[in-house]
Length: 532
Image (cartoon, rainbow, N blue to C red; front, side, top):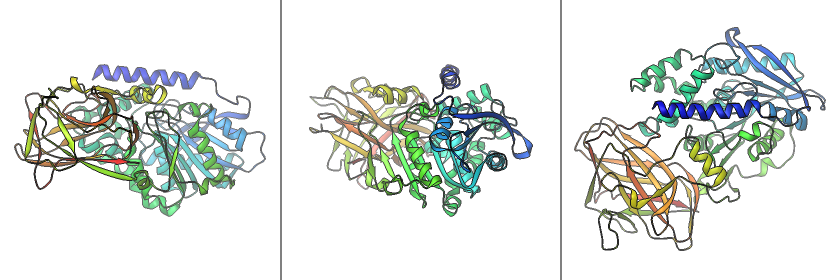
């Protein structure tokens, strides 16, 4: 775990150095002033105020809270571009507890929301900002704070939330499995760049003991998904931009959140990891996400007739192969059809010397298959930040060699080749009966596309942990894997792998335990594949 923390801290340090030292675009296009803004409880919030010099006021006001572990410099390049090209009055500020701002890290708590409203107050009092045209836009931590603020402060008319979250519990504790790499990254970088508040200290202290209860208790008020009614009442125009491979805030929660919004909305999903699709745009460099955000803000804050209101609200780009954007009227339309494949008993055959099950068209019941728990296999979800970035920038996916997956420690099922290829488009689902040998056991579900030799790519995955189960008693497990759009090449086949360890997560499966998979007649084991 210490090595993981050190590696992740080094990655963040490199990203911070790049952000802080890289030259921003439009360096002379707007006035930039460093100010102190009185936040909630008079805590000093340090901000960069970017004022357009080539547009007459009053100006639409854009407030940008910093991302986790970054400061008010993170958006200056984009802010100058927005000021120069579109005439926005921008305030980019360091969220409380980090870097040069006062106070302690509140983990997007009520004080952070109150700070955002105070920054808006200050902007209206001290700049030529238009009180009727106020927006917020930010990445990651700032994205969550922006959504939470829009739920509380009806002055916010438009939001651009990039790589944010809707539900902290489902993000950091998916299916009751601790997302340890993500949590370690957040805790480590907070220690390096800020001062943890009471909530964060309690969460970390108990997390180190294996107790997630404080994190679960603090999450609801910090999750925009719990404020959906307030957001819909206030009616801000909400644009959500996210990466398929986001390992801190997986996309599934944002998809559900988007579906519940009733006001103007947009959802963009593209290849990448946490914050990587929009990182260069924050510097003011050309970037699809920021270009879309500018059009969104221009329409909803400035009234520009740029066609945003006539475009489909769901826009996706496949996670592999460099395909183009495809648009849909809603998330459900991303999936044109589904196929239900039935898991058969893993066994050796004359053509398959490893115990492997099939993905069949007809139900396959009455079998069970036991594996040893507590030790991982070569099937895995990759490394946080690194794997998703490789997928985005080099089209290098997290790979697998099915012949090297230990069949004593994993269940493996493969389907027939797709002669013309197929697009997996939507949320794959797995259904299987599981019999644990202990009360708590973790499982990891991986969906791969493999060639005739069993070499292939991870399409999507999801962890699942049984809690307080009765040892020896079968449990029905239904798992929604993370949503994805993935083009399976011609001749490749789908493969489902389930094992009990993954370095990205903490596992409750211990060495010496076993887990048995089964397919009873009343509920056959299945894999449901969405396609387009």
